[in-house]
Image (cartoon, rainbow, N blue to C red; front, side):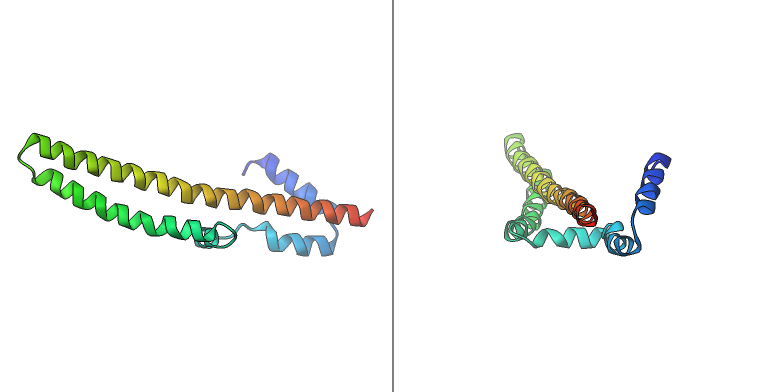
Length: 127
């Protein structure tokens, strides 16, 4: 965090009263890594993320199996077939991993938007 961000946070904190500081204090610290990862299983897309999480180890097993068979082949054509299977399963793993991490980032953005909404509502209520 840069000094400008810290100064801005301090200005925001000074503008709030005690009740607002307590309320924002609960939301000021972002949740830890594991809390963020497990939060993808809640909400309307939780079941989709669970299926994606189940598919990752399945395709990893497929990647290991096809990779093992790739190195065991003496015939070039069969080695290429197993190698393409290994490459395809690796690409699917990376795609699924991207989906999971994208959902974590989406949850972070939604958390910040809700925090801003809370600040705006408190400001409107105060006036």
